Amino acid sequence: MRQLYKGRGALSNPPARFVGHTAEAQDDGWYQDEVPDSIATEIRPEAARSVISRNDSPDIPFEQSINPYRGCEHGCVYCYARPSHAYVDLSPGLDFETRLFYKADAARLLRAELERPGYRCSAIMLGANTDPYQPVEQQLRVTRSILEVLLEARHPVMVLTKGTLVLRDLDLLREFAALRLASVYVSFTTLDVDLKRRLEPRAASPQARLRVIAALATAGIPVGVMTAPMIPAINDAELESLLEAAAQAGATRAGYVLLRLPHEIKTLFRDWLAEHYPQRAAHVMSLVQQSRGGQDNDPRFGMRMRGSGPWAALLRSRFELACRRLNLNLNRERAAELSTELFRRPAGGGQMALPI
Image (cartoon, rainbow, N blue to C red; front, side, top):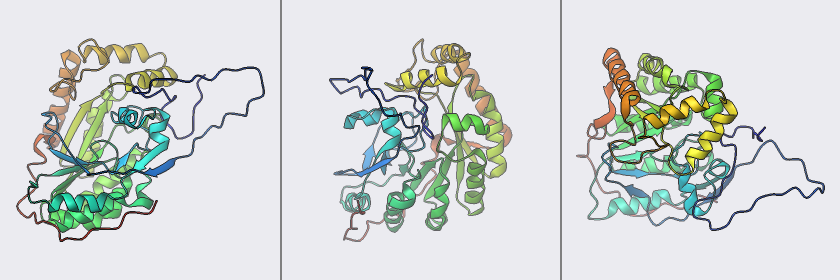
């Protein structure tokens, strides 16, 4: 039986792929302290020269993103951002959930980037990698500081989250929305509370996320649902129910992503399956590989988000049929819906770094 840690999704801490050495504990027969059943979260500032990341991927409907945090305390075992911890020589496993970094100088750096004469305005996504409204945001307020600068600059922004803390910033989001400058997507994976606890241990409950959708819609903020990831034989049967619940709560647009297993995630996910669904694990991975060209993962553009093969095609058809029935717009052009015409460079002067 593996060691399970309270509130954590990963079951192990495999070495980062760029580290040239590994260490393995050995029992030498001497007394050992009892292994704790929980791990505390560590939070550190991260120095950065810039905060805006740019991409030219045809698979995602935005060119720019900001990640206020590295690592995520929600602990979703499937998170495709886990391998990014390897770039700081930390494990994509438990380290990713427990050793977090925040961009303490994010607002000042963002202001400086927007002030540059050559800057071209296009919508910025918050939450492309890790959740901008994970628990540490309550104290650090990095995401809010970024929104304040973007609002001052009348800059369009998109937010993707599964955290209820987004409602704290309703005052700012209302102002964005009144100028056609914002949309919010809520990530929604299951209506099953027990599955949520195993899959996303520190994320908000399904009902809490539906309340977030309802509150955003009532406030006049364009809100959608991202049913992601869809995991074969784990939560894919809920696809239509998730979309229907979100639409009833007020969502007007939707997207989905098929489970992705790049780099170390494939091992972490297989371990998770073996622990929580041992009798189903082989079937799940068989369906994954049928949709990924016979491999655990297919990173090619055009394939990595949707997959290929009959099972993936059926999932896409189910999604599109449900969206038509529920009058949900597909999310492919969501960045184009936001205005760039009001952009103005922010006034000079920076913002002091957040306290460490």
